[in-house]
Image (tube, rainbow, N blue to C red):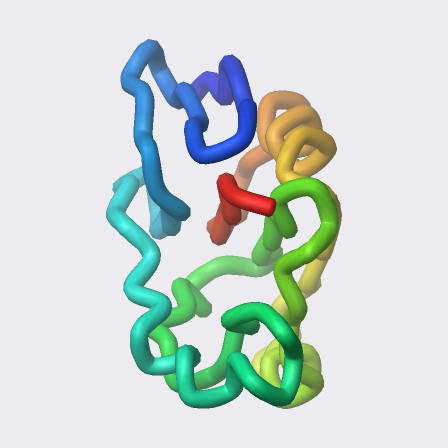
Length: 115
């Protein structure tokens, strides 16, 4: 999988452009369903990544791209990653893409494309 471009509201992976947050789960790309996390929005000022979402835990490493740095990751997600012994890496989306292009073995990702 080749992560090619990121700009506000858009990401290009393997030549296909996506205009929404994406989840990469064992090589499959799907849209991030953030509606379950919306109830936490007022506490964070932004819809955070929460355990209410379908997080792709079947991996040894989970990379979370935070857009330009604005996507909050709730502490419960961090605790769950430790409990599952999944290395959690949280970076701005552009840096997350660089990391994924370098080494993506047994790695899943959640990539935020706005803010």
